Every structure is written in C-alpha cells, then in structure tokens.
Length: 189
Image (cartoon, rainbow, N blue to C red; front, side, top):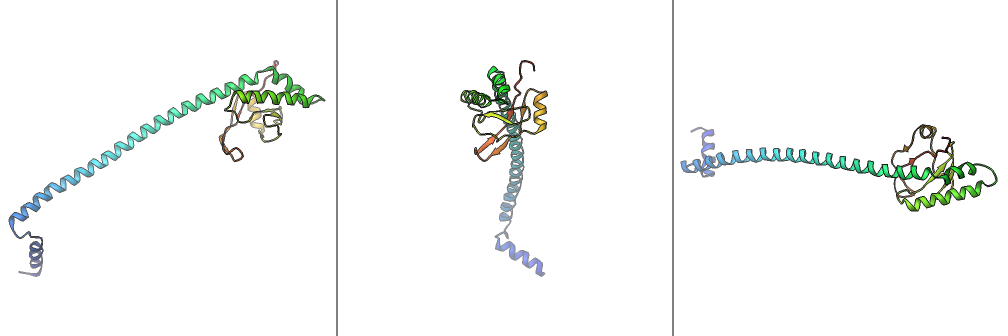
C-alpha cells in the first residue's frame, strides 16, 4: 500500500467510514443535504428578489401618494394667497403706502390685514407685500427685509399667476420653508 492509500484508509477509519453501511449512510446524508442546501439558497434568492420588487412597488405607490398630497396642499395654499391678494385692502393701500405722508399709516393697515390673513391661514409662516421693484412694503413680522426676490421671479410674477420657490431650511425658524408668491393685481391689471 502506498502512502496516499494509507492516508485515505486512515482518514476513512477516523471518520468511521471503513464499513460499507457507514459509507452508505454518509452518501445518503450528503445526497439529502446538498439538494436541500441548493433549494434553500435558490429560495432565499427568489425571496430577496420578490421582496425587493414588492418594496419598490410600495415605495412608488407611497411616493405617488405623497406627491398628490403635496400638490393638493400647495394648490390650497396658492388659492388662499390668490384670494387674499384680490382684496381691495391690498390694492388700495399698496398704492398709497409707497409714498406720501400717509405711507406709514397705510403700511400699518397692510400689516394688520396680513396678520389677519396669517391668523386665518396658519400654514403661512410669514406674509410679505412687495412693490414692483421687489422691496418689502409690509409684512407680518413688522421688520423690513428678510425676503429678497431677484429679477427673474418678479418678471415671472408680472407675467404669470404664481411663483413657487425651492424648498430650503430656515435656521431662524428651525424648519423647512417654501416661498410662495402671487401677484396683487389692480383693477387695471
């Protein structure tokens, strides 16, 4: 017997596989275990794939629902602003608040009107009235400044019916904000 056969024979005896019945038992066990492991692995891969597909469908459905809800919310906020911007209080006082000796009193009327709107519509954090140049005429905080619109958004407001800005984080308020603007149209347009 050569060395290799001797090592194999010694290994079989160590595993108690020197008898035929032990070899048959090991073979039967392996014949059962190998397909079972293969089936388990295939089942695992199919389950992971199916779960991934289900999660992707659920995520798409949830995202679509969130987009619809956000669209409805945004539509309501813009409608509130358009309704408020159509008030004669704004159109009459805005023209007078931009100059003259009664400008301060008119600005206070505008501010009082804006605070009334803000109390009625709680989703609006701060309301501003800007002149055609983009300068703050009145707001609910009583301070000037704070909001600066560039020339492109002002031009868009002159020709369009609403402006929806990009969402951003306001460190002062400690929450995300979204700038919404609607034009105040006088009777002559």
